[in-house]
Image 1 (tube, rainbow, N blue to C red):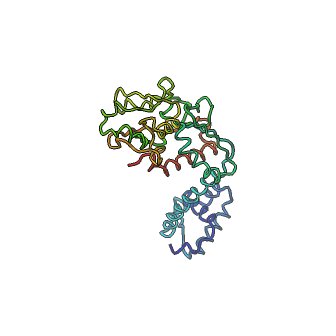
Image 2: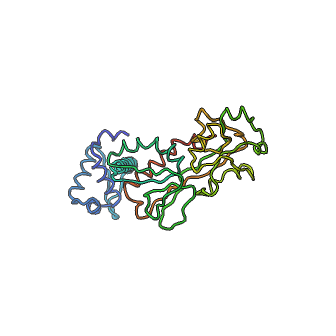
Image 3: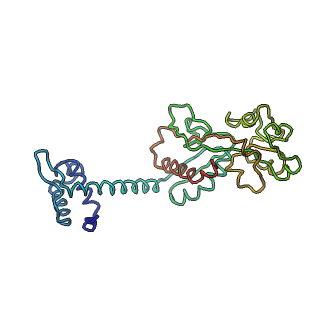
Length: 301
């Protein structure tokens, strides 16, 4: 707008907004912790630069003129932008250690590659990434933030869904050349399967095989999803794997991709006492940005 050329100081606009909201120089002065004479002088300076009146006096106090209303609309947009920049600067200034618990696959394949960008932007922040088969608890303060397969049921935690992710069936080309490629779900029964050790499954969401076809059982098992991927790549059999781990692996091929598609979720939780800590907010924002950037691998079409 034409009047932008007259404005050289966001602080003058802050005074203008406070006056418009309060309806008087005295009210604006109280909001801004300055004296009313200074407020009046700043408004006068704005009006001189614009060569237009911004306020008229009325029984209800100072009222905006047409020019004042137009300036108010533009100033609110600028205020919003300044607030967003301030929030970014606050997160960038986060300091301290944040310990994050995540599943082995998600921690190693999604969070670990993104961690350097987080730390480069926040030199005072340190990250402890606990990525293994099993979760540590945010409610008992074993970690500051936990990413789990299901929302924890604990009133001491603030919980939100982080992202959905999809899984499919994979095998090594060598295995398929030897054992044949199944073309139906029922054709999976004679195949070798790789999966979790049943009595060491730490979350019910990891019981994949029954969701593919009831009664399927794995012959080769591991408590580690990364070990399962390596077993599958080595030709041990067919395995249900997250697409974000397996889709880009040249040693694996999708099998029955039109028939086997499982969807699970990741949930982010933090203790209520920590939810406003700057370092926690910085890491939560990073997690949200990271999964947004990886949606094509987390939930491929």
